[in-house]
Amino acid sequence: MPILLAHRDYTRERVRQVARLSRTLVHADARAPDRVRIAGPVDRIPAAEAAALDYDDAAPGMALGPLWATWWLAVEGRVPAEWEGEQVDLLLITNSEATLWLDGEPVQGLVSGGSYVRDDAMLTSRAVAGEELSARVEIACNGLFGWSELHPQPQSAGAPAPAFRLERCELARFDREAWALSCDLDVLVALMDEPGADDAWRGELLRELNRFCNAWDADDRATWLRARAILGPLLEERRNATRTHEITAIGHAHIDTAWLWPLEETLRKCVRTFATQVRLMERYPAYRFACSQAQQYAWIRDRAPGLWARIRERVAAGQWLPVGGTWIEPDCNLPSGESLVRQFLYGQRFFEREFGRRARVFWNPDVFGYNGQLPQIMRGAGIDGFLTQKLSWNRFNRPEHHTFVWQGDDGSEVLAHFPPADTYNGTADVSELLKTARENKDLERSQTSLLVFGHGDGGGGPTREMLENLRRAGDLQGLPRTRTATPAEFFDALAEEPGPTPVHVGELYLEYHRGTYTTQAFVKRGNRRGEQGLHDAEFLGVVRGDYPREELERLWKLLLLQQFHDSFCVKKREMPAERISCGSWPV
Image: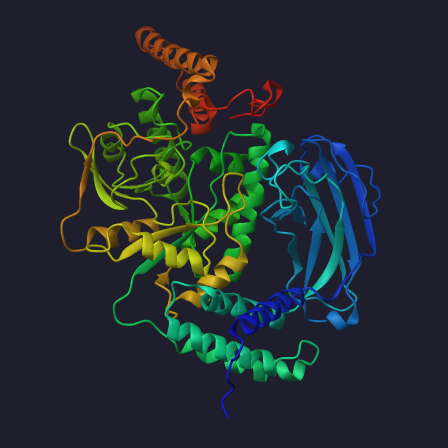
């Protein structure tokens, strides 16, 4: 006899509570390591030097800091017999950023204390009973967004930032069954709650999820298989109609090369983010991750050769996607035309030398407007696609299209796309997938959109939760059909769509961040003097017949680094002068 749902609101809340409970079971079996030791505070030092530090026993609750300091944590523990063959994770909360090192190599970034949390990291995928596990963690006493005053607040507006503190350090068994179940429920419950979904489909979800709650007992594993059998048809058999909007989902981690932290910390942000993404690629073969800014690649190549080798392997496998074609993601208004040409010259030269290919898409999502000469410069560098998101922030005149041809002042053209989700920090959840399809302004002629997902600005990138969402979303009824592909493949698909594509001629103007260019005149003056000085040095080198190629290239790259888009808009009232530091390590 069918069950009648007389109290739908209560039933929905019951389903949500069960979904929340399932998430807590992923690391339900956790315990303290046999030994935890700590050394610091120290400066940013290589891992080899950290191994030689004097370590003292650490206790939960101990204070860390100060801001920008580094601590090194040594964790040791023996695998209990009941964890034989299971994945063992490290659970760490320090209210800061951190890097897990195994066997002398960075393998994953961690972050806690803010709105974005990644507080678990795999130590071994298949443990052996009695095995000794050991790891080192490099703790960076700063928030994801730099200095502590801008540390994201999970409590309430105006609340003090969490103190840097060793709040949690445990070893835990990763429960794969609980993880898979919680991921299933996350997607289905979100669809059940989504007002934009079909009402009949939402009704079926509510009924079947209630059946699941009746069948599932968190404390009785014998019920789990039978209960999950109720979810299987909802995820595997409910498919979209013949025609539906299609989304290409590409992972990304926008890392501001220079913003609210010293440049030395940017390198560590790259290490944390890139190591995490390589590890995700090992677990999810279909995952694709786009990464721009040749300067960041060069830092990894020169300072983390083991990680660099793993990145190159993923590039060759087609999972890691070099994009952008520029040395960094530059401001596109204040640098001279020569500087912008050099951005592409040195960027594309790096990609061609290191990866055997040039970037085809200028990937510059966070810049404060784009001058009308850029299409000409892009085409000269072999680029025919352009992606940004920033103009969705316009206060008065929002862009009329998400896909269009951008025609430069000289008539050069590139195909442009603004992701309809209006973010380069997407979460790839149900509401965002639906928003991408719903908000696209070109549905009468285009049935495809790009979703750029992953934590950004301070780095981090996509999480395994996002990838699990996309794995289940693929062609699920009520959601746009979603796939992974390369940026070049996405733009090729755009170009093949029938019908005329609207054309925008000239500058793309941002009606936001107005005034940022006038706050630090000394930065603009220094930039222009640098450009003039390099012009004169090159001229004199040619006249003398003694052209210092290597030194001029080094200086040009140093100047291009300072032309990162946020470099021109740092306000002293937001960032104390002593925080504006380019560091002393080589570029």
